[in-house]
Amino acid sequence: MKTLTTYSVIASLMLSTLACQDKSLVLPDRDNDETPSAGLPPVETEKPHTDYRPAFEGQTRVPGMKT
Image (cartoon, rainbow, N blue to C red):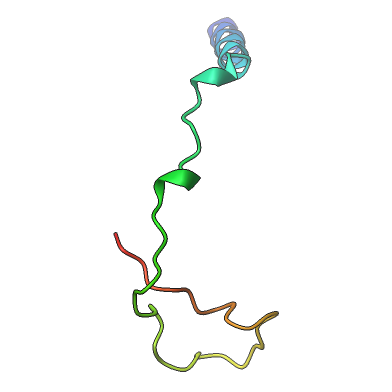
Protein backbone atom coordinates (compact mmCIF):
# COMPACT_ATOMS: atom_id res chain seq x y z
CA MET A 1 0.00 0.00 0.00
CA LYS A 2 2.87 2.35 0.81
CA THR A 3 4.39 1.68 -2.62
CA LEU A 4 1.13 2.60 -4.35
CA THR A 5 0.96 5.87 -2.42
CA THR A 6 4.57 6.66 -3.28
CA TYR A 7 4.01 6.02 -6.98
CA SER A 8 0.83 8.09 -6.92
CA VAL A 9 2.62 11.05 -5.36
CA ILE A 10 5.51 10.79 -7.84
CA ALA A 11 3.11 10.56 -10.80
CA SER A 12 1.15 13.57 -9.53
CA LEU A 13 4.31 15.64 -9.18
CA MET A 14 5.48 14.67 -12.67
CA LEU A 15 2.13 15.58 -14.22
CA SER A 16 2.05 18.89 -12.34
CA THR A 17 5.53 19.71 -13.59
CA LEU A 18 4.61 18.90 -17.18
CA ALA A 19 1.45 21.01 -16.96
CA CYS A 20 3.45 24.06 -15.84
CA GLN A 21 5.99 23.98 -18.67
CA ASP A 22 6.65 26.94 -20.93
CA LYS A 23 3.91 27.27 -23.52
CA SER A 24 6.30 28.61 -26.18
CA LEU A 25 7.08 25.00 -27.10
CA VAL A 26 3.62 24.64 -28.65
CA LEU A 27 3.58 24.39 -32.43
CA PRO A 28 2.44 27.54 -34.26
CA ASP A 29 -1.03 27.78 -35.75
CA ARG A 30 -1.37 26.26 -39.19
CA ASP A 31 -4.22 28.51 -40.34
CA ASN A 32 -1.94 30.43 -42.70
CA ASP A 33 -0.43 27.29 -44.24
CA GLU A 34 -3.57 26.33 -46.11
CA THR A 35 -4.17 27.66 -49.59
CA PRO A 36 -7.62 28.84 -50.63
CA SER A 37 -9.62 26.34 -52.60
CA ALA A 38 -11.16 28.75 -55.09
CA GLY A 39 -12.03 27.24 -58.43
CA LEU A 40 -12.38 23.66 -57.21
CA PRO A 41 -15.71 21.85 -57.57
CA PRO A 42 -17.75 21.43 -54.38
CA VAL A 43 -17.22 18.31 -52.30
CA GLU A 44 -20.94 17.69 -51.86
CA THR A 45 -22.86 17.47 -55.12
CA GLU A 46 -26.06 15.72 -54.05
CA LYS A 47 -29.02 16.94 -52.00
CA PRO A 48 -28.63 16.80 -48.21
CA HIS A 49 -29.80 13.58 -46.54
CA THR A 50 -31.65 15.41 -43.76
CA ASP A 51 -34.59 17.73 -43.22
CA TYR A 52 -32.69 20.14 -40.96
CA ARG A 53 -32.50 23.67 -42.28
CA PRO A 54 -29.04 25.30 -42.26
CA ALA A 55 -28.59 28.44 -40.15
CA PHE A 56 -27.29 30.28 -43.22
CA GLU A 57 -26.99 29.61 -46.95
CA GLY A 58 -24.28 27.08 -47.79
CA GLN A 59 -23.63 26.07 -44.18
CA THR A 60 -23.52 22.36 -44.91
CA ARG A 61 -21.79 22.64 -48.28
CA VAL A 62 -18.07 23.21 -48.21
CA PRO A 63 -16.05 24.28 -51.24
CA GLY A 64 -13.66 21.88 -52.92
CA MET A 65 -10.53 20.95 -51.05
CA LYS A 66 -7.08 20.00 -52.28
CA THR A 67 -5.11 17.62 -50.10
